[in-house]
Structure formats: structure tokens, C-alpha cells
Image (cartoon, rainbow, N blue to C red):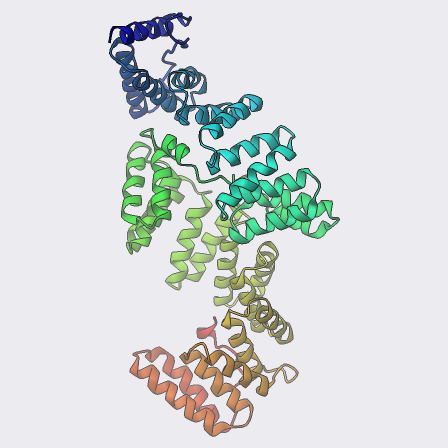
Length: 525
């Protein structure tokens, strides 16, 4: 006991003087920085952690591990509050006192990386991997630093090992793509980066290196497309230690981060409570208002969600996500003119927001402005070639403006690209059965498509398309029989608003006339 007391006394002397004593390790002096610009809750947290450290230092019975934790917690709070200069001596002292605790070199690696001291960051990440060799986040961050230092040959095995340990890691795959680009292996870079975007179309940071890879291959068209899509959104690894750091502070940012994770886990009530706590500290934060609205919407509280989306727009009219969310609610209510205003505002702030562009085009179509919708669909397909909603909407808009042959081509193209999406086959069958253009109609093919889609299940719309195909083939009795069955089914299901439209087509078939309207104004998909 006496020997341990002597060691602790030496540590106290080192902290106070910043020097070294032969009886113990050298520790750095720690002092409180200016906290006047911090929120009251953060000031309180840091003040309490500093007081706790002071008590641990003064307590001669404190074990080195307990003292390391006290230094480390204060350092983490400083780091979470972006007080890196104050955090560094705390974390270094924690590492000195507990050299086998992976947290301290890991946080020091991030601290030095953030301020551009890459060689130092590299050494700390290497140390964290010595302590925990299979830590995916450490592998990715070390690879990232080595790549930034101009050593792709050193970075590649780090990313490769991370991907082998976690095959779904976007950050590891992205790192391999950037490494291939640095080695001028453009084809490999395109493969990795396209896989990133396929796995997560919102991983916008992949677009710039992908553009550079296409440029290296001489494919300037694709290079230009991805350059337009570039955004500075980091592709980060799953990182439990940084999550712990982010959650330390009682701040709006910390509550937002925790709420986002709760949303991802579908814990909507918990997410809403966390966002409310953030708003209690910073009520004028548009992002928190929007996220709270999102959580409430997922809980079925649509009216409350609308209020928070509207408040986010009031606080920050340029906040595109809130404008978009309001547009979605208006669109669901059939208020397309108002929805158009919201989607337009969202795109003004964020032109690359493809979902808003597709929604805008849909509302334009439903208000008789299909011609105005076409360029939006074309842009959306250019930005996201695998966006099936944009491709189908584009085809329907072409039909609405009587460009039937082009509509047929787009629907056939969609069938080939997305064979699992029956909406293209069904849409093509409807067009082939009813198009006013004789050069487009093909009753036999329409019927074959309907029969194929029927294998996936029956719906009223599909039944109506089958009746249209029978009428195009001149089999009016069969068409009329199906139509009568559809009317009875609609009435039985309480879908009385569908009956007049179904009855209008029945009258055609009873007069032995085919349908020449692919979609009426009130059934446009």
C-alpha cells in the first residue's frame, strides 16, 4: 500500500508541474480552456469531469487505471466539444497510465488526423491495431491516412482486410476504389465505386473519384455525369468508439446523432424523445425539427409531423429535406399544386435531390403538365439510371403527351433492365392494347404480357388491362364478362369511385368498340 501511495504522489507532482519524477511516468499538465461560448449543459459536464479528475489526482489511493479513466473522460469531452488542444494532454496521460487500453491511441489518431498531422495519426492508429488487430474502423482509418500520405500500396491491404472482416462495409469498398484510382487502375476503381453506389445510392462522396476513374478511362460522358453528382458527404465506417464520443455531450448535435441511430433501428419513440431533448437546448435547429417530424410520421402522427416540417421551413426556408417532406405529405393528400411549390423549393436548394425531382415530375403529370415533367424525369434518369420510379414515370409522361412510340420503347427498356418489376410489363401491356397510334398497338403481345404478369397475382388494374387486350383482339364478349366481374369486385370491396370508369369501358365493349385511352386522368399511375 505504501509503495502505491508513493507512485500516486509522483503522478500528482508530474501533473502539477508538467515534469517527470523517477518514481512514476511523466504526465502533462491539464487546464480548463475558455468555455464561455459553450452551452450551459456542456460547461457543466466539462466542469464536473475536471473536478472529478482533480479529486482523483488528490486521492493518493487512486489506482493508475482509475486515474487514466478520469484523464480520458475529460479528454473525450474536450474532443467532443472540438477543444483538441485541451484534449491532447488528457488523452496522452490516459495512454501513459493505461497503455493497453485501445481507446486512447484510437482517439489520439482521430485527433491528429482531424488537424492534419497525418504521420502522427498513422502511428496512433497503428498502435490501436496492435492492441486490437481486427478492428474494422481502425483498419479503415489507417488506410485512409496512408492513402492521404501518398502510400496506396500500404493502404490497400488495410482496406482489403477490413472488407474481408466486414463484407458490407461501404467505407472499406470506397477505400479500395480510391486506392485503385491512386494506382491508376481505373477499371478496378470504377468497379469498386459503382459497387458502393449500388449498395447505397446516397453515398454521394463516391461520385467524384468515380468521375476521375471514368476520365482516366477516356469515358468523358460518364465522368461529366458523376462530376455533377459530387457531394462532400463522408463515407464512414461503423465506429463504436466514435459513437461513444459523440454521445458524451449534452448538446443538440449529440442528441441528433443518437436520434438518427434510433431511427435507423426503427426505435421511433426513442428517436422522437432524443430529438425533443436536442430541441430543448436549441429550439431553432431546422435539422432537429425535421428529424422529429420524421420520427412522428413513422409513428403515424402525421399532423404533428407536418407541424415540425413546417417549423423547420420557417426557421430555415432553404432546408431542402423539410421542403421535400412537406411536399410528400401534400402529394399524399392530392394537393399537387402546393406539392409542386415545395418540391421546387427543395430543388432550388439542392438540385441533385433526385427523389424531389421525381416527386415534382409526378405532381406535374397529375396536374396536366406532363410536358413540363419530361425534363425532370430525364434528369433523374441521368443522375440515377437504376431509379425505376423515374423510368416508369418518364414512360407514362411520354404517353400522356402522345409520344406513344417513345413511351413503348421506354417501357420495353424498363422490362429488360428490371425484369422483376412487373410495373413495366403491365404498363407496356396497357399501352399495346389501347394506344391510339395504330403503329404502336399489338393485341397479341399485350395479352401475352398480361398472362405473364398474372403469375405474380391478380389486381383490378390488371383485370382491366386484360379486358382491354381482349377488346383489341376483337373478343368483346370476354372483355365485357371480365369488366362486369371487375365492377362487382369493386363494389364488394367498397371501391365505388372506380365503378364509373369501369362502367364506361364496359359500355364500349358492349358496343363492340375497343378502348383507346391507356390511362384516364384519374387513374394515371
